Every structure is written in C-alpha cells, then in structure tokens.
Amino acid sequence: MQNKLPERLKKLRADHGISQAKLAAIVGVAQQTVDKWEQRISQPDLDMLLQLTAYFEVSLDYLIGKTNSFRATVNEENSCATIDNGFAFVNTSKISINSKNKN
Figure (cartoon, one colour):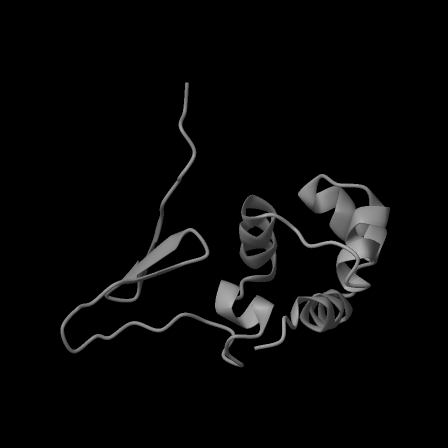
C-alpha cells in the first residue's frame, strides 16, 4: 500500500481553502514542515496525524490512503465501537478520548 498522505493532505487543504502556512499555524509547525510532508521528504508523527485528522474531520485510514472513506463507521447492529483519530464512535455518539496524561 502506497502512502497517500501527501496527495490527500494537498487535496484537503485545497478543499478547505487553506495554505500550507495556515495549516502549519493551525497544527503548530513551520510551513516548511507541511511542504516536506507534501513533497514526501518527511512524515508527520502519530500525534500530528491525529491533529490533522481532527482538523479535517477525516479518518486516519483515509488520510494515509488505506481507505477512500472519509469517516469511521459504526456497526449499529451490535452497538460496536470503532476507535479512529482519537475518537470513539458508539451508537453514533462522538466521545473524545484523550490519550495524553494530564498533570
């Protein structure tokens, strides 16, 4: 499976009408960092990927190209939860899961 992050990131930025500089400011990195992600020079770490998925409201699987579906799905038949992008979807309710320790 080829990593589609660079193409997906460019498309999502275009769809949201934001520049590399604006996205960089939103997620707290330099504009050059976003450019490197889009040029396949470097890749964001997991925490940054989760920030990107939260901002663009897409699943991590979509962002990296594992699926073409924007959203995680819920199996409502047996109320199964799917955890994706730092959120748990249970019975179509969105519950935030914070994986960072609060001191």
